[in-house]
Length: 299
Ligand code: AMP
Ligand code: ZN
Ligand code: FE
Ligand code: FE
Picture 1 (cartoon, helix red, strand yellow):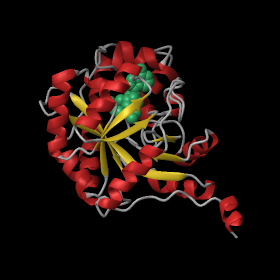
Picture 2 (spheres, rainbow, N blue to C red; picture 1 turned 30 degrees about the vertical axis):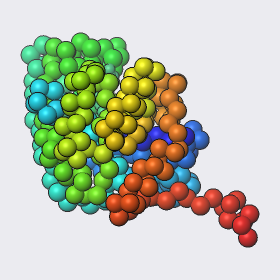
Picture 3 (cartoon, protein in one colour; picture 1 turned 180 degrees about the vertical axis):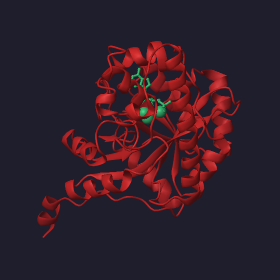
Picture 4 (cartoon, helix red, strand yellow; picture 1 turned 90 degrees about the vertical axis):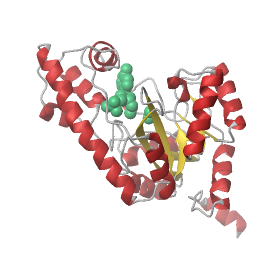
């Protein structure tokens, strides 16, 4: 089993990159990708932990992107993102600037509703990319809400009272930056698009034209029907098939690494297919660690 979508304390997960890799190993995964929001800051630590523990770690990220019509948003996961992705780093910085302004706007809105949370309160819960989950944790800590879910449902979520949209990259720019960095681009959790049939096909054709290489067919919120139709769509548009839990640790306690909410199973073969595609493009790949038992058996 593999898991190609996870978050650490480098963004809004609760496990450090090294802890996350330990959890992946304990869950029996053969490979895990770290895909923190708008950053690669946790990747070096995760890869080092992977070496120590004997589990393949794929360095990744998850980008906040506008939908091509500009009306909505997409998340694009990048896999095999290099350690110092120069132009991509400029994009991360731009997104982080936008997040800072947005976080202050959210706090101002909360204040106008009589809820006093300072940026310093929020920062206590964040080590890397600061987002709504950290504001939610500060609210929970101060007893303003009873749960993270309530913080999102009533206040911070897309339909919440203090919602502020996030700065997003243009999709063509995002896909170009990932391609130029030599990363493999994956459309994350496609169910969030709320599209079916021709509309889904039109969007996928447009993104593919911009350079999209794969789609997350296996995702914990996908019903069996979703998985089937996204698999068909991936085949139709010649997109690589990916999958992951979107693990966030205690920030999303119902979603576990590897298995998501219980039923997720992302097969190893998908990783091999992606790596084969990368080799054919002359791109680098991570290698599965050589097991000591296998070594001694060969001697
Ligand atoms: P942001 O990137 O600041 O817009 O925050 C979005 C993140 O909030 C998502 O990636 C999720 O990790 C998290 N999130 C969204 N809804 C919830 C929820 N109901 N409970 C906990 N975390 C959530
Ligand atoms: Zn997140
Ligand atoms: Fe996402
Ligand atoms: Fe995610």
